Length: 546
Ligand code: 5AD
Ligand code: SF4
Image (tube, rainbow, N blue to C red; front, side, top):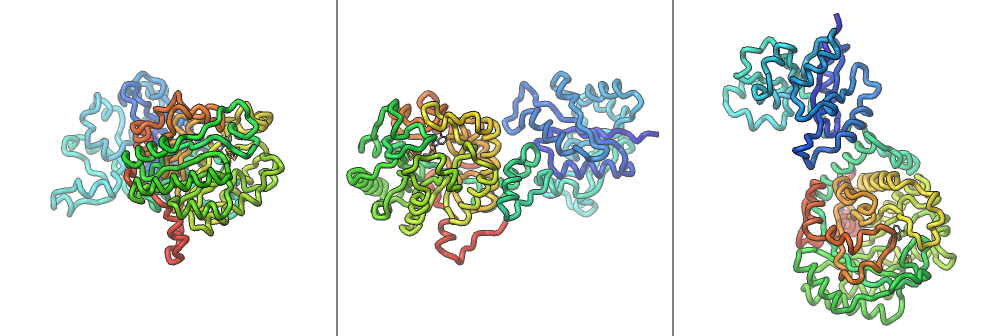
């Protein structure tokens, strides 16, 4: 006679190693050959749960996870039957479709506790046996309150509740700490130390990508916790002496209305950020080098220090400046500086910039930043024309080798009025750039566990959940835009940039919701310096090994 089919009901959000070990134990109970059908429960359309992924995503990961696993199948009946899905209905349907088969329903010990509330539970028990796997060990101790219980209690075996005492012969109890690995993703993640391996990892998609991202989330929480630091972003000016081929505010784009935010407006924005508990602000703008500009920034820094009693963390981002200027600004109160290298491949850098732009000068400026004691931030664009996965992997190697303290990186997004727009057919699709970006963030977190990583606006421009996903898996910094509204439409680095029309995206409520949805916490009134920076200064604090 055929072994029964074991129906394993669950939301598998996402499927993990614990589920697979439960399924294996169920198969073993029948000598290893029984079939297990993973019955994916549908998202109840009337009760959308924020933490439940869409049906298609859970289904896809489930299929990939059990591919090539003997006897394991995925079953989508509940996605197609009307909701709410009652087990009795699903069971009747499956029995009709498979008249010759006997079914066993596999559920967790937690579900067994409320089993008598299930619709037609007695009929279910008449039709088929119920197989139960024990609850996860760490969740049970507090529930075992009677002393007597503790003594007779076998920690790896489920208990049958008293209201089901009459059915003990219909209930099969599986044994073992089966869910021990329940947060471990289905695939093992071994990142190695060779950029060539990383280039492969960056191309992972589906369940392998999810495994990578779950691993990175774990390492992030272990090393920098769940805090997300806020940096109020002030786009100070869109004047720029540079002419980068990809950038919307490049010098030669005459469509741009140029502006400089007034001193008073900057101070107001900073005061707002300080009052609202943003630990820091970022003053960002195009590259201007004249004396007047240098002095203006210096003055603003000093005013900000006075206004906040030295509390407000200030990050600058004004391109390549000479060492004296950087030193001056550092002494006036700036403590961090962002200078993206854009790509670590010098040949590619050359193709993205006019001949008077120099990769070596860029690197030299990064050295100056270290020498003048800044927390050094850098970054790259992901999905550029001519950029290979190995180039991206080498970008990560670059950050690691140069001991960068903070990274802001995101997808390249084409801009109609730039020379690089010509190459728009020669880049990965938006979806692919999004996937690459998430893998880059995850892999970077695994390689550099204590750095600060920003969840960038460009991520949100590719996918409405982009910033949230970046925070969930790797990032711990977000930069809400606090530039006065009247200037925002003039700071178009790329098209579809979240801007004036979507300014509520950066409202306090929206940012808080993004952070909450990412299962993180808002760190108000904290400056959130890079832990990596302090470890770098004091070699006693070695960066933790994974
Ligand atoms: N797509 C994505 N990012 C861009 N930047 C400039 N142009 C683009 C674009 N088209 C980024 C660069 C720069 C930062 C200020 O904005 O990385 O360093
Ligand atoms: Fe200027 Fe930066 Fe744009 Fe290049 S990327 S043109 S340096 S603002």
